[in-house]
Length: 429
Ligand SMILES: *Cc1c(COP(=O)(O)O)cnc(C)c1O
Ligand code: SF4
Image (cartoon, rainbow, N blue to C red; front, side):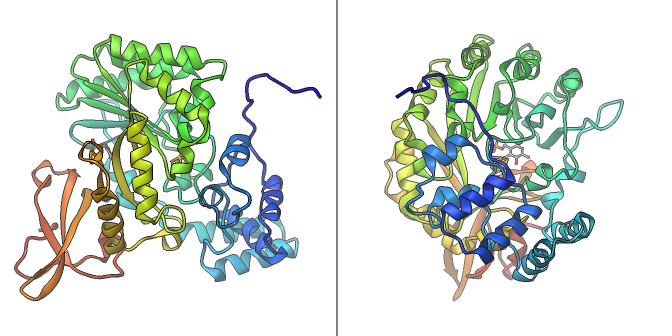
């Protein structure tokens, strides 16, 4: 028997292979047509590592990792899915399908939180595309070559970018404008490189973004937001530029700055493969610290045991749990949302059973137009049930860490569902 011992090669699955995956999961012909319809609206991408190493095919379609990457037949409103499925089934003209797809996408709140209008800084020339500056200390950078991921999460809040809508794009040629912007804003101490997934870029391209930042004295940290530890850990182990990437990471510490890898893990299963442990150790050997974050998603990780197991395993591996997010108000939010009251219970139940050293995590946190809003509890005041909340991060720094209150509502799943309580501090005026 001949076995290929070469390094694992990244292979992305096509839309045609999606049908094979849902067949393998045992879906009916009608459900498979619905999946095809959903995949016309929302982005789909998965690779050989996720399919072969992460998904438990004995448990599909209920398996959480399967649900993390494979579109679900009931993810979008049934009327929309039916309309599209009928067109596809009847072999309608692509333009007719596109028309309906565009209509459905527009109904999914593609630009939540005022991201497009409110956060783009300007210099003396014009707006700097691909840069967002919302909180005084931290600038967000969306490199042009990093606007895709090794696989797409079904719940992705950046989905419009992946279906060709408005690229927020930053080109390497503009790094000097970013550096200029940082120097004009002495409060900026941290740059967060995000996407998509910046680790989709080669080390040579990544270096063109990182190296110019190393000489900026006021910068204390550079962060890289990535899902690659979960979706393609080979990136740091056996990919052709794995070692040059690690040398680049070392250069950040050598320049006297902290490199933080913000690892997105949705489920403890993603931590199990040996390659992940190897990647984590190799990253840590460069002096970088891996912090972890993920949203709380119905049917994927809406269980306190899943979170406590995840935090404990991460902690054991030397990673630092950082954020639990609430699913944002875009795309298939209605399908994946967990009510705030339940999110608070899941967070607390998980937080309670980890050791103090592991309670570095914050949340459940909503990324809203005003800032990162955490639910701190549910209490009764003057016979009325209320939510206690605070802003972890705010566009207006004066609002950071002040408690405020909202009327309790067991179904509320986003800040827009909250209302003030008479006589108690409220967020907006
Ligand atoms: C989360 C976030 C940051 C980083 O916030 P920290 O609290 O420093 O982790 C920066 N900018 C934006 C727009 C964010 O959403
Ligand atoms: S890793 Fe992040 S940006 Fe990429 S698909 Fe998942 S949620 Fe979206």
